Image 1: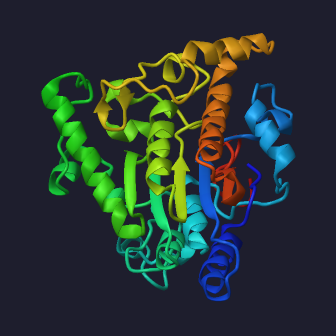
Image 2: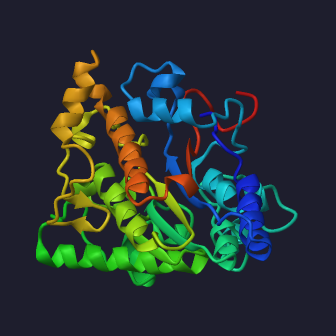
Amino acid sequence: MRKLINLSLLSQACLTGGIAGAQQNRPERPNVIFILTDDQSWDTIGFMGGKVHTPRLDAMKKQGIFFSNFNVTTTVCSPSRYSFLTGRFAGRCHAPRFMKLHPPGTMTRVENNVELESDAWNLPKVLQKAGYFTGFTGKCHLIHHDWLGGGQNWKKNGLETYPPGADPRDPEIQQKMQKNHRRWCEALKEYGFDWVDGVYPANLKELWCDALNVHNWDWTVHKAMKFLEKARNRPFFLYIATTLHHGPNPANNKNSVLADPHLTGEGYVAETYHDLPPRKEIIRQTTRAGLPENRAFATWLDAGVGAIIDKVKALGLAHNTLIIFTSDHGSYRHGKTTLYD
C-alpha cells in the first residue's frame, strides 16, 4: 500500500511548531489524527481506481496532499507499525523479547516479533513532552507479544482465560473480557499514551473467542469520538488503528457490516453506537453506487473516516488539525517475505 506521509517528518514538524512556537508566538500547535488501516490494498480505495464507493476518502485526496510514492520498509503488521511510531527501522528494535530472540551478532528475522520499547523515545512520548495529550484506540500489535498466545500465557501475565466457544453475553465471561481489556489499556499507557480505550490487542483471532472474530469499526470510531471530546481544548495526538481490511475477510459481510455490532474487543457491550450511518444503510449506499454488497466494507471504513472528519469540524478544530490516512502495508498477494520473490 502506498503511503500518505512521512511520520519522522511529522514528529519533527510538530515539535518545531510546539516548542519553538511557544517561544516565538507562532501559530498554535497542530492537532494530529493518524488513521491506520490494516492490510489495505490500493484497489479498496476509489481514487486509486478500486471498484469501491469511498466518497470521503476521494474528497480527502482532492482537498489534501497525496503521497503517491512512499513505501514501508517491512511489509508486516508489527514492524511497520513500529517504524511509524518510532521513525526507526524495525531491525533496530531493542525491546527485551526481541533481543532474546535475536541476540547481538546473530541474524535477525523481522516479523511480528518487533515491539515498542518502554525505555526509548517514540512519537507519542515526544509529543507528550511537547505538551500534547496523546490517545490510542483500535488495533495494537505493538507490545507484549508474549501475552497473545492465550491459555497459560494469559494466566501468567494476569489475563483471564475462557474457552474459544465462550459466549460474550455470559456475565462471567463478559467480566473476564472487560478485565483483559482494561489490562491492555493500562499497559499501552507505558508507551506514551495518556488516554487508551477500545483496544484490540492484535489480530481479531487473538482475542481467542470465536464470537469476537468479527470487525467492529463502529466501536473504534465511537472511542475516537470520546477522545476528541475530551481533548478538544488542548493540542492532541490520536492514533486510530482499524482492524479493516485484515482477516477475517471483511468482504464476507458476516465478518463486518452484518456482524453483531455489540461484539467488541472488550466482549459484549449493550451500548448502541450512532456515529456512523446504520450498517444496512452502508450496504444500500454501496449497491446504489452500482457495486455488489460484498464491497460494503470499503464504504464502511470510508464512512468512519468521514465521521471523524465531521467531528473535528463540529468541534471547530478543522483549521488546526492534521489528519493522516494510511495503511501498515498492502495485502499479502504473492510474497514469501523474502527479497527474491
